[in-house]
Image (cartoon, rainbow, N blue to C red):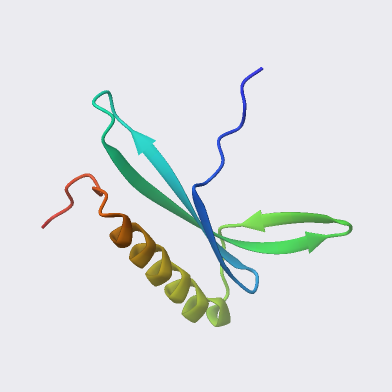
Amino acid sequence: MTQKQKPVEEIRLGRIRASIWANHNESREVWFNVTVSRLYRDGEQWKDSSAFSRDDLPIVAKVADMAYAWIWGRGASTQDSAE
């Protein structure tokens, strides 16, 4: 049985969450990817969605900024994006 990969960090403001995922290549270089989701309840079960309302967008922007700062603080590559 394979173990489900977990994010290396989660940033959450209210019901908006940024999950930061670590990736490695053959030479053990690390880079990060980020997924952003909105949590909601469906009956007794918590679910998540990648759709956001107008009022969610300022919080989405804030968690994205916080995720960027977290990654930047690690000094890790972001696949050598346009720098």
